[in-house]
Image (cartoon, rainbow, N blue to C red; front, side):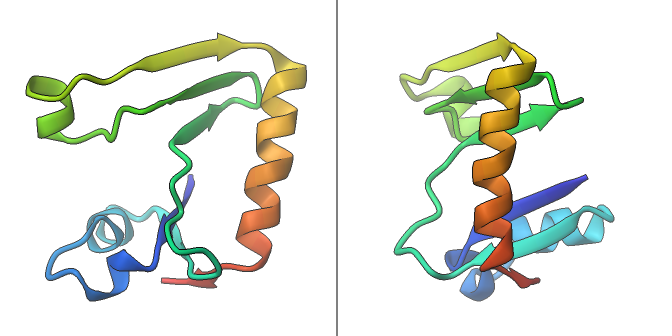
Length: 93
């Protein structure tokens, strides 16, 4: 499992980067953009989860959010290629 986060995770007191790294998830920081604002999960190279949902308690309980689950290998591959491009210019956390 791997994750790319934005540069705000370098300076936050206890960031998502700390959480994912401590969970054994390979974590990268994409600092080439103002915000790494993509919210996607690619599962088994077939399922894509995307939308505005931030995977936080506030998103779950307070915010107006959307979440879309797509099951399509070709579409998942396109998302994976985009994710890989961002990983190539990201740094290990």
